[in-house]
Image (cartoon, rainbow, N blue to C red; front, side):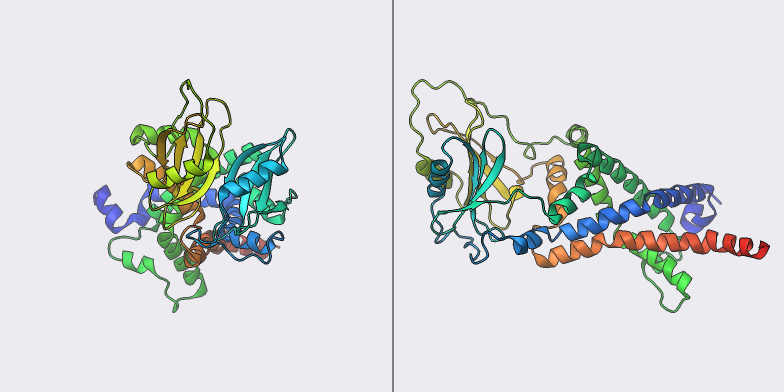
Length: 387
């Protein structure tokens, strides 16, 4: 029987399969608790916005803003109020209300700290500063993204993602039972004994969640080693729209006063069909002013267009449409956040994503049970018999 035929008909007898089983097994044994921690915290963080919204105390009686912007105070009113309240500080960026955060937000940089000021959606009056104290939600997010160890923890997560990719690759090879019985490996037979049900549950669950877990693993590598992954992807498929353009201002002979209302109106004319999402102010003399506009059908940075203007003569320099992907490289980079977090397509999608995340602890538990049934149960019996 040829090697290929053995793979198709009797893969269980191949030595390479036994080697892959050892790799799959010991990677799972070593990383089992870590994978459970990452999966459970990730499933909880799918609902982070809802948890933070319930925990908010600055706007308990304010209704969510209208998606069309009807009834909202002008953003320039909020900007003027913030600059008047903090004349010695620098306004970095101002955001319009959203259906999740029903207030204006402005980030302000002082000499010692950076803080967020919120304003009423209808009047533009300042409501106060966001509390700077850390909440349990912030700790939960840090535990998931950095293991509470900052940059080193993020890199450790990247390494963990690489090992999870190894587990998915070996897992799909181990899943293949042969061409005659492969359809039975897709489901769980409840008529079998509990040990066989546990085996079927591990095998079938691993198959059905293989693609999304592989993507989560790849995104973990990306978040841990963003620059290296970006360069690798860019070599395979040029990244065009998934990275911000480099915009520098040229010399201006006759600067004119900045009319922010006029600039926002021009951005609407240049980018019709979008809604105003915010204004980012120049961070240096050579930097542009940026008008952020949200495309319909989504929210957040991943659906935002950025229009760059010269703050000295109000000329439009360039428009960056992040998420309007042109290449496979763009798609790969852009999808990292939406598909990893699963928070952009409504509550139903969030519930699905959180449920899929909990498949990882299920695989760890069923895998550990299989290890007990096949190895340690017999060893314990022999030890008990000797004593």
